[in-house]
Image (cartoon, rainbow, N blue to C red; front, top):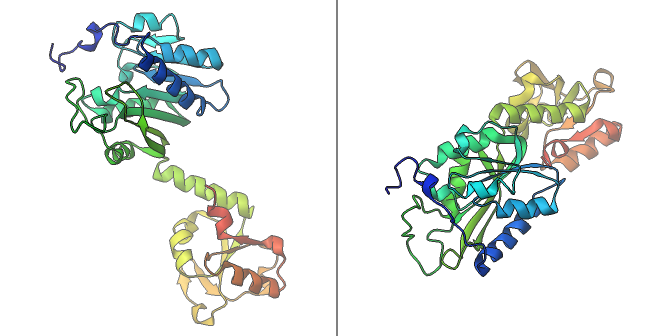
Length: 308
């Protein structure tokens, strides 16, 4: 039956032999991988390509999770007895509450349009959720140059899988090789990723960091490259009350609605001061302390950007 014919996978049954040592080995390894991603043990998990549901059964025996599956083959009938819910339809047609974890083992290489599949997963993923994807590493075995499996429409490398996820709006957290699927697919790629915030979302998160750290209106000290790179693009949305610098050569320069000036204790007293330099932050901090400015008023740019 041609793979492109609709309904091909729906005709298949008994895709796994649960009694083989290699099947038990891969389930043990996958349980360990998922256990490391279940933060509270109460997440909603979706496995795309859940087969007979054995992985989900093992996870549910260990964690108080809701574990759903997507399975087109006849094996989904067995999975329904082990999982909370099984969808006998492509993920793109699934309507469900967001999942904190979506996992898929050796599925993406079977899908003609992986971008569409990943878009479906992104729609089903919670904002703070993650996906775990495993596919053969190139041919899937170090002694094979090409994967001849007719069901496999794509052959991934670490670079190509990472780029695919990036194009689809995901940011890679972890990528590793050498994971076991079977004797002939003993080398698999495993990638853990999360949804990448949009440009607008990232800007809002950064603005919120500035607001939380400064607590309101503030001054900026050190008007150079770091200011132009990391603060000027946000200046219109922040309550900046003045641009300051110790270099008289910069006084009078205009940036947007502000003109650079020197620090004046009477004019600028009480407002927090953000040091807008990474390289010279220590020197500027000491200079401000020498001017009599209280340490609690001084905020480093690094404390805003660090540990995002």
